[in-house]
Amino acid sequence: MSASRSTAMLRRIFHVICALPFFASSIALAQGGPPYYTNDPGTPGNKDWEINLGYMPFFFTGQSISHTPDVDINFGVGDRIQLTYEDAWLRVRDLPAPAKYGMGQDQLGVKWRFYDSGEEGMAFSVFPQLSVNNPNHAVQRGITPPGASLLIPLEFRKKFGPVDLNAEAGYNLVHLGPDGWLTGLVVGHDFTKRLEMDAEFYATGTFHPSFAQPTLDVGARYKMHRPIILLLMAGRGVRPAQSNQPFFVGYFGVQILLPPKSYDRE
Image 1 (tube, rainbow, N blue to C red):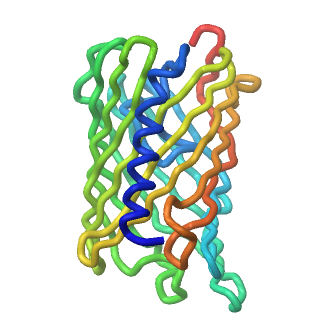
Image 2 (cartoon, one colour; image 1 turned 90 degrees about the vertical axis):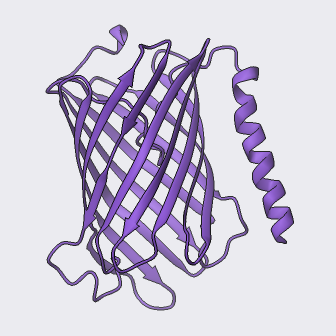
């Protein structure tokens, strides 16, 4: 596919996502965070926990990376601050070599929702996240990158009548590697009090060399017996499947909210 056709495809996808609010009669409170890559300004609440456990596959032509599982633990400090720890047990496969297993990088983050005008208004947050390697042989075995990185993103939420949009954009400072960027957009629809479905456009890349990896996915959250929420997401790269463009991405897991809350009062 030529560069012009890829650009045209990206434009069409953006148009489709941006048009969703005008065709949905009951879109409300689209949320970033697992199972999606885009984060939102939301925090768990004072002294509340949000724990996400999921299987995250990334399949490429001739290779794959899977989080088996990915562990994402969040704790609320006050109403606007969230402390985050995330890590994963990785399965890395480069055909025809056998799969390699090892611990991923620890990710330590602090989210601060510095502006919030209420459910009907806007909210902004910053969510710096430091990723560092564990004292193991994952770097030498080619499982994790050699250096640490600091991601500095800005999250945004705005409600337009019955529509709630979440967007994120950020800069990634990388030690021993090229600096990068990310951007994401999530639009959702509450079909019932328990079932929410969403569409997401997400992209990451680097500046020097110039590289982008855009993906498009759809997913759902289903509130089971409290405090468990089922998390599902599946998608693929926007560009043709190559060694550096995924033909499948996903998230399959659960979210645990502690202390338990009644879904009927949410």
